[in-house]
Length: 225
Image (cartoon, rainbow, N blue to C red; front, top):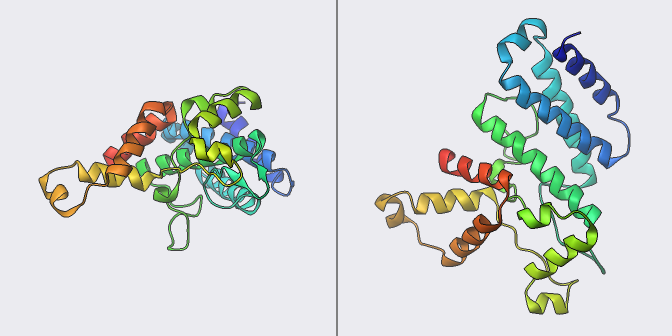
């Protein structure tokens, strides 16, 4: 049995799990399917020869996973406040993981002709520009809730630490990067766009703290503007 025979079987197994209520199962399934899609792009001709329908079935399954994930947590954001309580590390990891998985998909879709997958083509659907940028490297790589809270507290202004329930992290999105690239793109762009010093400062801060996925997103924003 070849590797892609195994992938085809795994896709069917993952699709059979679609009715399970566990958000972590759907997240892990979406991550696995995304990895298979990435591998498929570098083996496209060989895969299509033996499994011509695999790209469509993978994308169909990915869409199903994200439909369930959207019902459990809407959008592509990692909110930092909840009513009457501070967000838990587990909830943050789930939201951030979903965001990052979607980011990889949209990067893939920007490089290849992906016309069936996550909702992203209609006016009412999610678009790449709406996705928040990946969290900082130190937050994402925190190994437990204690270390995550320490990093998170350092990122919250003093007034926010005094009222943690009312404070929230301001997250940039992909459109912010594209807008800033256009601003720096040449005289014709600068003549028609007003520089937002606050936005530029936030982006520069994000650049300093981003991880490897952030680097990839930043590169895409330069290539795609």
